[in-house]
Length: 369
Ligand code: CP3
Image 1: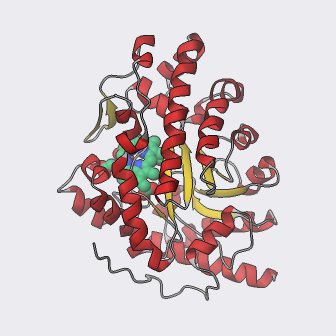
Image 2: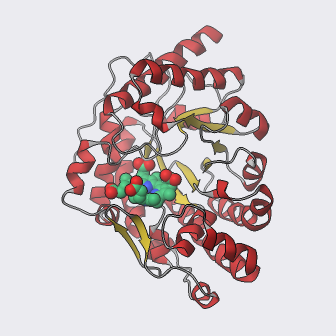
Protein backbone atom coordinates (compact mmCIF):
# COMPACT_ATOMS: atom_id res chain seq x y z
CA UNK A 1 0.00 0.00 0.00
CA UNK A 2 1.39 3.41 -0.89
CA UNK A 3 1.04 6.05 1.76
CA UNK A 4 1.80 9.63 0.99
CA UNK A 5 3.44 10.64 4.21
CA UNK A 6 4.74 14.16 4.48
CA UNK A 7 5.65 16.07 7.61
CA UNK A 8 2.53 17.88 8.76
CA UNK A 9 4.12 20.59 10.81
CA UNK A 10 5.52 23.80 9.47
CA UNK A 11 6.51 25.17 12.88
CA UNK A 12 8.68 22.29 14.07
CA UNK A 13 11.89 23.38 15.77
CA UNK A 14 15.20 22.26 14.32
CA UNK A 15 15.55 18.57 15.03
CA UNK A 16 18.87 16.94 15.71
CA UNK A 17 17.41 13.46 16.20
CA UNK A 18 15.06 11.26 14.19
CA UNK A 19 11.72 10.48 15.80
CA UNK A 20 12.83 6.93 16.53
CA UNK A 21 16.06 8.14 18.15
CA UNK A 22 14.18 10.74 20.20
CA UNK A 23 11.49 8.36 21.44
CA UNK A 24 13.87 5.54 22.34
CA UNK A 25 16.27 7.98 24.03
CA UNK A 26 13.42 9.29 26.21
CA UNK A 27 12.43 5.71 27.15
CA UNK A 28 16.03 5.12 28.19
CA UNK A 29 16.28 8.43 30.11
CA UNK A 30 18.84 9.91 27.77
CA UNK A 31 18.90 13.57 26.63
CA UNK A 32 16.63 14.56 23.72
CA UNK A 33 16.45 17.64 21.48
CA UNK A 34 12.77 18.09 22.39
CA UNK A 35 10.15 16.10 24.27
CA UNK A 36 8.53 13.35 22.22
CA UNK A 37 4.73 13.26 22.17
CA UNK A 38 2.10 10.71 21.18
CA UNK A 39 -1.51 10.36 22.31
CA UNK A 40 -3.20 7.25 23.61
CA UNK A 41 -5.99 6.28 21.18
CA UNK A 42 -4.52 8.72 18.66
CA UNK A 43 -6.25 6.80 15.86
CA UNK A 44 -9.98 6.88 16.39
CA UNK A 45 -13.33 8.51 16.21
CA UNK A 46 -12.27 12.13 16.72
CA UNK A 47 -10.68 11.90 13.24
CA UNK A 48 -12.97 12.21 10.21
CA UNK A 49 -10.69 9.87 8.24
CA UNK A 50 -11.34 7.14 10.81
CA UNK A 51 -15.10 7.77 10.95
CA UNK A 52 -15.26 7.56 7.15
CA UNK A 53 -13.64 4.12 7.17
CA UNK A 54 -15.91 2.97 10.02
CA UNK A 55 -18.91 3.55 7.75
CA UNK A 56 -17.73 0.56 5.75
CA UNK A 57 -16.11 -1.69 8.37
CA UNK A 58 -16.63 -2.67 12.00
CA UNK A 59 -13.78 -2.09 14.44
CA UNK A 60 -13.02 -5.82 14.53
CA UNK A 61 -12.91 -5.94 10.71
CA UNK A 62 -10.36 -3.12 10.73
CA UNK A 63 -8.28 -4.80 13.43
CA UNK A 64 -8.33 -8.15 11.66
CA UNK A 65 -7.29 -6.75 8.27
CA UNK A 66 -3.56 -5.92 8.36
CA UNK A 67 -4.00 -3.47 5.44
CA UNK A 68 -6.83 -1.57 7.15
CA UNK A 69 -5.12 -1.64 10.55
CA UNK A 70 -1.99 -0.22 8.91
CA UNK A 71 -4.01 2.46 7.13
CA UNK A 72 -5.69 3.58 10.38
CA UNK A 73 -2.39 3.49 12.31
CA UNK A 74 -0.99 5.96 9.79
CA UNK A 75 -3.96 8.38 9.82
CA UNK A 76 -2.80 10.41 12.84
CA UNK A 77 0.81 10.21 11.64
CA UNK A 78 -0.24 11.88 8.39
CA UNK A 79 -2.30 14.51 10.18
CA UNK A 80 0.04 15.49 13.04
CA UNK A 81 3.77 15.71 13.79
CA UNK A 82 3.57 12.84 16.33
CA UNK A 83 6.77 11.15 17.50
CA UNK A 84 5.43 7.60 17.53
CA UNK A 85 2.72 5.48 15.95
CA UNK A 86 0.73 2.87 17.89
CA UNK A 87 -0.50 -0.16 16.03
CA UNK A 88 -4.27 -0.06 15.53
CA UNK A 89 -5.75 -2.89 17.59
CA UNK A 90 -7.65 -3.21 20.86
CA UNK A 91 -6.89 -4.77 24.22
CA UNK A 92 -9.74 -7.28 23.93
CA UNK A 93 -9.02 -9.61 20.94
CA UNK A 94 -6.66 -11.73 23.10
CA UNK A 95 -9.78 -12.77 25.07
CA UNK A 96 -11.30 -14.02 21.81
CA UNK A 97 -8.12 -16.02 21.28
CA UNK A 98 -8.69 -17.65 24.68
CA UNK A 99 -12.14 -18.82 23.59
CA UNK A 100 -14.43 -16.00 24.73
CA UNK A 101 -16.98 -14.38 22.46
CA UNK A 102 -16.28 -10.65 21.90
CA UNK A 103 -18.46 -8.08 20.17
CA UNK A 104 -18.33 -4.29 19.99
CA UNK A 105 -21.96 -3.23 20.32
CA UNK A 106 -22.86 0.18 18.91
CA UNK A 107 -23.46 2.65 21.74
CA UNK A 108 -22.53 0.10 24.43
CA UNK A 109 -18.85 -0.62 23.87
CA UNK A 110 -17.30 -4.07 24.17
CA UNK A 111 -19.42 -7.04 25.26
CA UNK A 112 -18.21 -10.51 26.23
CA UNK A 113 -21.23 -12.74 25.64
CA UNK A 114 -19.96 -15.63 27.78
CA UNK A 115 -18.28 -13.94 30.77
CA UNK A 116 -16.33 -16.01 33.29
CA UNK A 117 -18.66 -16.84 36.16
CA UNK A 118 -17.59 -20.37 37.23
CA UNK A 119 -14.28 -22.08 38.06
CA UNK A 120 -14.94 -24.46 35.13
CA UNK A 121 -15.12 -21.55 32.67
CA UNK A 122 -11.69 -20.38 33.88
CA UNK A 123 -10.26 -23.90 33.55
CA UNK A 124 -11.60 -24.02 29.98
CA UNK A 125 -9.72 -20.85 28.92
CA UNK A 126 -7.15 -21.65 26.26
CA UNK A 127 -3.55 -20.44 26.29
CA UNK A 128 -2.43 -20.55 22.67
CA UNK A 129 0.51 -18.92 20.89
CA UNK A 130 -0.18 -15.39 19.53
CA UNK A 131 0.96 -16.52 16.08
CA UNK A 132 -2.20 -18.70 16.02
CA UNK A 133 -4.74 -16.38 17.61
CA UNK A 134 -3.53 -12.84 16.88
CA UNK A 135 -1.54 -13.17 13.65
CA UNK A 136 -3.52 -10.29 12.08
CA UNK A 137 -1.96 -7.78 14.49
CA UNK A 138 1.51 -9.24 14.01
CA UNK A 139 1.04 -8.93 10.24
CA UNK A 140 -0.24 -5.37 10.66
CA UNK A 141 2.93 -4.52 12.60
CA UNK A 142 5.16 -5.90 9.82
CA UNK A 143 3.25 -3.94 7.19
CA UNK A 144 3.21 -0.72 9.19
CA UNK A 145 6.95 -0.85 9.83
CA UNK A 146 7.48 -0.82 6.07
CA UNK A 147 5.59 2.48 5.87
CA UNK A 148 7.19 4.04 8.95
CA UNK A 149 10.81 3.03 8.49
CA UNK A 150 11.59 5.54 5.70
CA UNK A 151 10.40 8.26 8.09
CA UNK A 152 12.24 6.85 11.13
CA UNK A 153 9.01 6.91 13.13
CA UNK A 154 8.88 4.24 15.85
CA UNK A 155 5.95 1.86 16.22
CA UNK A 156 4.42 0.97 19.58
CA UNK A 157 2.84 -2.45 20.16
CA UNK A 158 0.52 -3.00 23.13
CA UNK A 159 -1.58 -5.33 25.23
CA UNK A 160 -4.09 -5.06 28.02
CA UNK A 161 -2.63 -6.10 31.39
CA UNK A 162 -3.84 -9.25 33.17
CA UNK A 163 -6.05 -7.37 35.66
CA UNK A 164 -7.74 -5.14 33.10
CA UNK A 165 -8.38 -8.12 30.82
CA UNK A 166 -9.71 -10.14 33.77
CA UNK A 167 -12.06 -7.25 34.51
CA UNK A 168 -13.61 -7.41 31.01
CA UNK A 169 -13.64 -11.24 30.96
CA UNK A 170 -15.46 -11.52 34.31
CA UNK A 171 -17.72 -8.45 34.14
CA UNK A 172 -18.63 -9.14 30.51
CA UNK A 173 -17.98 -5.51 29.53
CA UNK A 174 -17.21 -2.15 31.06
CA UNK A 175 -18.10 -1.76 34.74
CA UNK A 176 -18.46 1.03 37.25
CA UNK A 177 -17.56 -0.74 40.49
CA UNK A 178 -16.02 -3.98 39.21
CA UNK A 179 -17.99 -5.95 41.79
CA UNK A 180 -17.82 -9.30 39.99
CA UNK A 181 -14.12 -9.33 39.20
CA UNK A 182 -13.10 -8.09 42.65
CA UNK A 183 -15.46 -10.58 44.32
CA UNK A 184 -13.81 -13.42 42.41
CA UNK A 185 -10.41 -12.13 43.51
CA UNK A 186 -11.48 -11.90 47.17
CA UNK A 187 -13.51 -15.09 47.43
CA UNK A 188 -11.85 -17.72 45.24
CA UNK A 189 -8.06 -17.23 45.32
CA UNK A 190 -7.37 -20.50 43.48
CA UNK A 191 -9.56 -19.65 40.48
CA UNK A 192 -8.19 -16.10 40.54
CA UNK A 193 -4.61 -17.33 40.46
CA UNK A 194 -5.38 -19.69 37.57
CA UNK A 195 -7.09 -16.92 35.60
CA UNK A 196 -4.25 -14.47 36.18
CA UNK A 197 -1.59 -17.09 35.36
CA UNK A 198 -3.27 -17.84 32.05
CA UNK A 199 -3.68 -14.13 31.25
CA UNK A 200 -0.08 -13.30 32.09
CA UNK A 201 1.19 -16.02 29.73
CA UNK A 202 -1.06 -14.81 26.92
CA UNK A 203 -0.21 -11.14 27.49
CA UNK A 204 3.54 -11.72 27.88
CA UNK A 205 3.85 -13.81 24.73
CA UNK A 206 1.60 -11.47 22.75
CA UNK A 207 3.83 -8.50 23.64
CA UNK A 208 6.97 -10.49 22.89
CA UNK A 209 5.60 -11.54 19.49
CA UNK A 210 4.74 -7.92 18.66
CA UNK A 211 8.32 -6.86 19.40
CA UNK A 212 9.63 -9.71 17.27
CA UNK A 213 7.28 -8.63 14.46
CA UNK A 214 8.82 -5.14 14.60
CA UNK A 215 7.28 -3.07 17.42
CA UNK A 216 10.16 -0.94 18.77
CA UNK A 217 8.36 -0.07 22.03
CA UNK A 218 5.62 -1.91 23.96
CA UNK A 219 2.89 -0.57 26.22
CA UNK A 220 0.99 -2.54 28.85
CA UNK A 221 -2.44 -0.96 29.51
CA UNK A 222 -3.68 -1.64 33.05
CA UNK A 223 -6.47 0.88 32.64
CA UNK A 224 -8.68 -0.19 35.56
CA UNK A 225 -6.04 -1.14 38.12
CA UNK A 226 -6.80 1.99 40.15
CA UNK A 227 -9.99 0.21 41.29
CA UNK A 228 -7.85 -1.85 43.67
CA UNK A 229 -6.38 -1.07 47.07
CA UNK A 230 -2.58 -1.04 47.02
CA UNK A 231 -2.54 -4.19 49.18
CA UNK A 232 -4.85 -6.10 46.84
CA UNK A 233 -2.74 -4.96 43.91
CA UNK A 234 0.41 -6.19 45.65
CA UNK A 235 -1.06 -9.60 46.51
CA UNK A 236 -3.34 -10.44 43.62
CA UNK A 237 -2.08 -8.55 40.60
CA UNK A 238 1.56 -7.47 40.84
CA UNK A 239 3.09 -10.97 40.48
CA UNK A 240 1.07 -11.55 37.31
CA UNK A 241 1.87 -8.19 35.72
CA UNK A 242 5.50 -8.83 36.61
CA UNK A 243 5.36 -12.24 34.92
CA UNK A 244 3.86 -10.76 31.74
CA UNK A 245 6.49 -7.99 31.70
CA UNK A 246 9.28 -10.51 32.28
CA UNK A 247 8.22 -12.55 29.25
CA UNK A 248 7.83 -9.40 27.13
CA UNK A 249 11.20 -8.15 28.38
CA UNK A 250 12.99 -10.95 26.57
CA UNK A 251 12.67 -8.85 23.42
CA UNK A 252 14.85 -6.11 24.92
CA UNK A 253 12.66 -3.23 23.71
CA UNK A 254 11.52 -0.48 26.14
CA UNK A 255 8.20 -1.11 27.88
CA UNK A 256 5.70 1.53 29.03
CA UNK A 257 3.53 0.40 31.96
CA UNK A 258 0.36 2.47 32.13
CA UNK A 259 -2.51 2.64 34.59
CA UNK A 260 -5.08 5.20 35.73
CA UNK A 261 -5.83 6.27 39.29
CA UNK A 262 -2.53 4.80 40.44
CA UNK A 263 -1.43 7.69 42.69
CA UNK A 264 -1.32 5.46 45.78
CA UNK A 265 0.44 2.51 44.18
CA UNK A 266 3.15 3.91 41.93
CA UNK A 267 6.07 2.15 43.67
CA UNK A 268 4.16 -1.12 43.27
CA UNK A 269 3.58 -0.56 39.55
CA UNK A 270 7.24 0.28 39.24
CA UNK A 271 8.12 -2.95 41.09
CA UNK A 272 5.99 -4.95 38.65
CA UNK A 273 8.17 -3.64 35.82
CA UNK A 274 8.49 -1.27 32.90
CA UNK A 275 11.07 1.25 31.72
CA UNK A 276 8.48 4.03 31.55
CA UNK A 277 5.47 4.43 33.86
CA UNK A 278 2.37 6.09 32.40
CA UNK A 279 0.35 8.25 34.81
CA UNK A 280 -2.95 10.10 34.55
CA UNK A 281 -3.73 13.71 35.54
CA UNK A 282 -4.98 12.89 39.03
CA UNK A 283 -1.41 13.21 40.35
CA UNK A 284 1.10 15.99 39.56
CA UNK A 285 3.72 14.67 37.17
CA UNK A 286 6.69 15.69 39.32
CA UNK A 287 5.13 14.16 42.45
CA UNK A 288 4.56 10.90 40.58
CA UNK A 289 8.09 10.87 39.22
CA UNK A 290 9.57 11.49 42.70
CA UNK A 291 7.50 8.62 44.11
CA UNK A 292 8.60 6.30 41.33
CA UNK A 293 12.22 6.79 42.31
CA UNK A 294 15.32 6.81 40.11
CA UNK A 295 15.94 4.71 36.99
CA UNK A 296 12.51 5.10 35.42
CA UNK A 297 11.05 7.34 32.74
CA UNK A 298 7.55 8.83 32.87
CA UNK A 299 4.70 9.31 30.40
CA UNK A 300 1.79 11.68 30.73
CA UNK A 301 -0.23 13.34 31.91
CA UNK A 302 -2.56 15.97 30.40
CA UNK A 303 -6.26 15.58 31.19
CA UNK A 304 -7.72 14.64 27.78
CA UNK A 305 -10.68 16.95 28.47
CA UNK A 306 -8.20 19.87 28.25
CA UNK A 307 -8.30 19.35 24.48
CA UNK A 308 -11.89 20.63 24.46
CA UNK A 309 -10.82 23.99 25.94
CA UNK A 310 -9.96 27.05 23.84
CA UNK A 311 -6.30 27.05 22.77
CA UNK A 312 -5.02 29.53 25.43
CA UNK A 313 -6.38 27.30 28.23
CA UNK A 314 -5.07 24.16 26.58
CA UNK A 315 -1.69 25.79 26.07
CA UNK A 316 -1.49 26.84 29.71
CA UNK A 317 -2.29 23.31 30.90
CA UNK A 318 0.19 21.76 28.51
CA UNK A 319 2.88 24.18 29.65
CA UNK A 320 2.07 23.30 33.27
CA UNK A 321 2.81 19.60 32.59
CA UNK A 322 5.99 20.42 30.67
CA UNK A 323 7.18 22.73 33.47
CA UNK A 324 6.59 19.97 36.02
CA UNK A 325 8.67 17.59 33.92
CA UNK A 326 11.40 20.24 33.66
CA UNK A 327 11.31 20.87 37.43
CA UNK A 328 11.87 17.17 38.07
CA UNK A 329 15.33 17.82 36.63
CA UNK A 330 15.76 14.46 34.95
CA UNK A 331 15.69 12.99 31.46
CA UNK A 332 12.96 10.65 30.28
CA UNK A 333 9.63 12.42 29.84
CA UNK A 334 7.26 11.33 27.09
CA UNK A 335 4.34 13.72 26.74
CA UNK A 336 0.90 12.12 26.45
CA UNK A 337 -2.66 12.49 27.65
CA UNK A 338 -3.34 10.80 30.99
CA UNK A 339 -5.94 8.52 29.39
CA UNK A 340 -7.19 7.98 25.85
CA UNK A 341 -8.09 10.96 23.68
CA UNK A 342 -11.89 11.33 23.58
CA UNK A 343 -14.34 11.24 20.68
CA UNK A 344 -15.26 14.76 19.44
CA UNK A 345 -11.85 16.16 20.42
CA UNK A 346 -11.21 19.16 18.11
CA UNK A 347 -8.56 18.10 15.60
CA UNK A 348 -7.07 21.58 15.42
CA UNK A 349 -6.26 21.48 19.12
CA UNK A 350 -4.46 18.17 18.65
CA UNK A 351 -2.27 19.70 15.95
CA UNK A 352 -1.47 22.77 18.05
CA UNK A 353 -0.78 20.65 21.12
CA UNK A 354 1.75 18.44 19.34
CA UNK A 355 3.55 21.40 17.77
CA UNK A 356 3.57 23.31 21.05
CA UNK A 357 5.13 20.41 22.99
CA UNK A 358 7.92 20.39 20.42
CA UNK A 359 8.60 24.11 20.24
CA UNK A 360 8.24 24.79 23.97
CA UNK A 361 10.52 21.95 25.06
CA UNK A 362 13.10 22.72 22.36
CA UNK A 363 13.32 26.24 23.84
CA UNK A 364 13.33 24.87 27.41
CA UNK A 365 16.23 22.58 26.59
CA UNK A 366 18.13 25.26 24.66
CA UNK A 367 17.73 27.56 27.68
CA UNK A 368 18.94 24.87 30.07
CA UNK A 369 21.98 24.03 27.95
O1 CP3 B 1 -4.07 4.25 20.64
C1 CP3 B 1 -4.44 3.88 19.51
O2 CP3 B 1 -4.67 4.68 18.58
C2 CP3 B 1 -4.55 2.39 19.23
C3 CP3 B 1 -5.85 1.88 19.29
C4 CP3 B 1 -6.52 1.45 20.58
C5 CP3 B 1 -7.90 1.14 20.62
N1 CP3 B 1 -8.17 0.64 21.84
C6 CP3 B 1 -8.83 1.29 19.49
C7 CP3 B 1 -10.26 1.44 19.80
C8 CP3 B 1 -6.00 1.18 21.85
C9 CP3 B 1 -4.58 1.39 22.37
C10 CP3 B 1 -7.06 0.66 22.63
C11 CP3 B 1 -6.87 0.21 24.02
C12 CP3 B 1 -8.06 -0.08 24.83
N2 CP3 B 1 -9.24 -0.65 24.44
C13 CP3 B 1 -8.13 0.11 26.20
C14 CP3 B 1 -6.99 0.60 27.05
C15 CP3 B 1 -6.83 2.06 26.94
C16 CP3 B 1 -7.82 2.83 27.72
O3 CP3 B 1 -8.43 3.73 27.14
O4 CP3 B 1 -7.95 2.56 28.93
C17 CP3 B 1 -9.38 -0.29 26.65
C18 CP3 B 1 -9.91 -0.23 28.07
C19 CP3 B 1 -10.08 -0.80 25.52
C20 CP3 B 1 -11.42 -1.43 25.50
C21 CP3 B 1 -12.33 -0.70 24.61
N3 CP3 B 1 -12.23 -0.66 23.24
C22 CP3 B 1 -13.47 0.05 24.98
C23 CP3 B 1 -13.93 0.27 26.40
C24 CP3 B 1 -14.03 0.52 23.80
C25 CP3 B 1 -15.30 1.30 23.63
C26 CP3 B 1 -15.09 2.65 24.19
C27 CP3 B 1 -15.65 3.70 23.30
O5 CP3 B 1 -15.07 4.80 23.38
O6 CP3 B 1 -16.60 3.45 22.55
C28 CP3 B 1 -13.22 0.10 22.72
C29 CP3 B 1 -13.44 0.39 21.29
C30 CP3 B 1 -12.32 1.07 20.58
N4 CP3 B 1 -11.03 0.64 20.60
C31 CP3 B 1 -12.41 2.20 19.74
C32 CP3 B 1 -11.13 2.43 19.23
C33 CP3 B 1 -10.72 3.48 18.23
C34 CP3 B 1 -13.68 2.96 19.39
C35 CP3 B 1 -14.57 2.03 18.67
C36 CP3 B 1 -15.20 2.51 17.38
O7 CP3 B 1 -14.50 2.72 16.39
O8 CP3 B 1 -16.42 2.59 17.38
